[in-house]
Every structure is written in C-alpha cells, then in structure tokens.
Length: 213
Ligand code: SIN
Ligand code: FE2
Image (cartoon, rainbow, N blue to C red; front, top):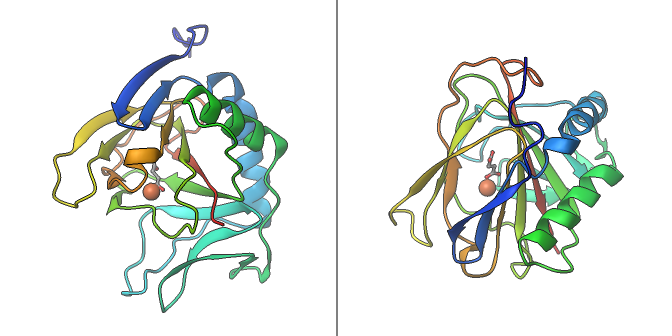
C-alpha cells in the first residue's frame, strides 16, 4: 500500500503538562521494531495475563529488559524471570533502547534509562482499561510508549480516575512520552476496531519503556 506519510517529518503535539505525542517519530524504525518483536516473542511468547482478581486480560503481553511486568495471584510486579518460561526475559534490543533514548530526549526528559519494556499486542476487540502506571519504584522517570500497526484510541485523564479524559488516535509510529506532572495520570486504550495494517495485519503493537528502580 502506498504510504502517503512515509516521508513526513515527525511533529509534536502537547497532551498534558509533562506529556507529549511525538507523531510518526518511530516510523523509520517501524519495520525493524516489528521484526524484533517477533524474535523476542519466539523466546518469551505473548500471553494473556490473569489479574489478581481472576480476570484474563484481552491484551496479550510479553517483555524484554532486565525485568518484565507481570501478574500473579497477589498483584502486579516486575520480575527478572518470565513465569511462562522460567527463564530471564530476553535482553532489550539496542534499537529499542536507542529509540527510547531519542524519544525521551525529544520530549525534554534527559537521562531516561529504562530497565523494562512491556510489549502489548492488541487483536480486534482488545482493550486496556483506565489505569495508572504505578508499579515502578522510580516515578521521576517518564514512560515512553510506541504505537505500531492498527490505530487505536488512547484515553489520557488526570490523577483521579474520574477526571475528564482526552481521546486521541494513536497511529503507526506515534510515540507518547509522559512524566513529571502527568507521570501518574490515568490512561487506557479503547477496544481495537477491526482493520488491516500493511505492517502488522490485524494487530496493534505497543512498546512501553519504564524505569522500575
Ligand atoms: C499501557 O498503558 O501500558 C499501554 C498503552 C498503549 O497500548 O498505548
Ligand atoms: Fe499504562
């Protein structure tokens, strides 16, 4: 398919205090990122995690990095071991780290050094309910979130669950960085609409880089 936006330079859209969307920032790396996701998933497969409350999440997840986000019967935790394989999570590819470095710097956060990257895979109908990213011990560091494939509606609110929500469409190559005043803002992804993307088929992938310690 002809991609009319392939040569377009990235641009920035402010989202909230401390939060910005870097539109198309990851487009140039997208194909390589998608190939890396496949390679990582061959080591630590995508799986639908079960919340402590017994609910099976619709988003399939895996991780790379020194630690990975996972669930157990007690809660949510970062673990150095993948509970599915009983092995360490695969290392974070250099390309992932380079992208998180340039994106965080472009958003005004210097010295971001993630030790975890959660990889989300959304099939049609998958969603991520409103939540805060608060399992990280280090809240001084931002979150860097990379969208690939099928577009999805991202909701971004405030510190309280019932604060007003902004809704923005995140498309292939978009990167959202949030930190500072918005580091603990509620956010989520609405149910993915069926679509076909030339790079990912029916799926949307999302990488979120975190510094947990
Ligand atoms: C997340 O909140 O961990 C992921 C958000 C997204 O998929 O864009
Ligand atoms: Fe999140």
